[in-house]
Length: 242
Image (cartoon, helix red, strand yellow):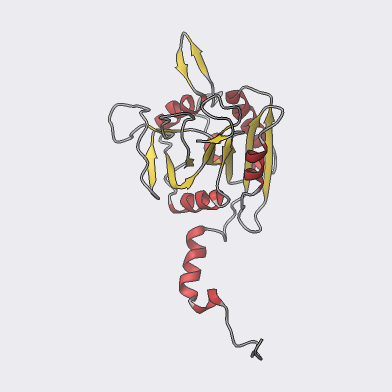
């Protein structure tokens, strides 16, 4: 080691202060970005999935709360849990809900990337990470082209690193503005799995079929790549990440 003069180095971030300041402003980290992480699950979740959830980076010095909805059908789990969040005197005032499912493995920086996108795009009520339906020839969960005058949920192709607006999202790794669920115009329950005389549909697209009527928009961030874990091999080899 050579002798060093201490106190003459201003630091990497201070060397280009305008650039560093712009990064902070764009990311919105100076604002409240309180997040409830909501996980619907059974009695347990796979170890690999659990570890990926534990590794998630939350915004610095921001409150965060992890909440599980255990043993319920997924539509009921989301609807009932969000009702409880809104009714809570503290959590009901927070900014975001992060929905994350028991078989989705997000990247460690996935949440902070989604928050940055939300700060950049206030027109969106929800932005999700990119994940695919399990199995060979699975499709990306970027449901529907909003430029088509006829409402549809046909899967769109991803665009590398871009934000793709769509008509509906999956819920495996989504950031939602909590305020949208306080809109009394939205039908309840918000999320409902349908299989009967009224049709067939998953709880996520059931929600978006209604929310878009009232101007709520969503998108998928193709820079946030999320794995879809198949523990038992129902859609291929066991222990596969689609």
